[in-house]
Length: 489
Image (cartoon, rainbow, N blue to C red):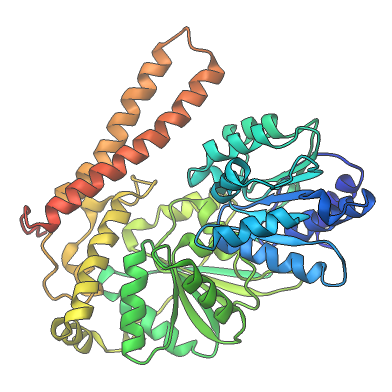
């Protein structure tokens, strides 16, 4: 058993509620799945009794994976398991619920929909609830759905809550969902935040050489299984189309794809020994992809927690090995201090320019002459600037410091597309100005309790993010319609 399994399973078998924190790739799926199945057998739970275990996850892909593991564990047993996620046939799910599903793996929105609207869904016999990746569930905006679910389902149950981070929101969720829980913080005593066997490095590379380095790296590692992370769906689409066009076969997963396409790609990548998968953070949480050799972070993640989740796609399981490479601009070097503070230590890798593939001229001509690739490159370029402006660490990732001429070369443009950089700078200022004013008002309100202040601040951040995104869309649309000037440095 892994460390998290050896500490979690005995407590769950004793009937305790558990609040757990564990590194990604530590084996926590079986840590909650085995006790959940044992709970059903001890209670002699039958199919006609409806649902005895509910497992809630943040993403459809993670739900699908836990569902697959559950089916494997239950293949010689009589218990039934079902999957409730968006993007699939809701009527078929409802039919199965009426017949009886002993274990349900679900995303919050679809689960709440069935709890509220599906007649014949028997859940009043619920014995156990699992909330996996709780911090991710809250981060992507399912707090209200989760609260409603907790109000609907029976209170007399055993609950386990797993979260990679312990925030005030997680503490509040634990208070609402758990009964005298035992805290299992497997990572607390660890010297590093990532698993053993993971070799991590970074490379400083100028904007105009980023694609050349990626291309060279993929060519040299073509017999490996590699995941490459980007900051936007448009970047994934562009680089996938470009690389496939120049005979560097790659797969892609991002949030703009239909659910079935994402699942098909996920399984295809899982079932091969060597391949390249380009993806956004939709693939960074919880997914168990076997034998990934390299994690390449082409665009640095928003924070150190996301970095840890990304590299957690490799080196999974006992005695596993893997490698990770982070691309950084020279002016982003302070990001390493944030990683070090989070107990993530990286070695510097060097890739001499003389060793990079000499493809820039061919790359530029291809983007210039191919209408489809040119359009994709344009969208990816603007999405890159948008993501950069939206980065959480504004003191390091300041869009005003980017050399647009060099950034444009990374997307195949000798002359970068017309953008008004002040739009992206304003996006940064808008969020922080509004948030600063609100936090100042909350601090001045002496009558507001500390607990309520915390809740108000958290609610404010969510509202401001929505406002930020709406303003972002308006400004970007204005820019798209041509109401902008060429920005040069």
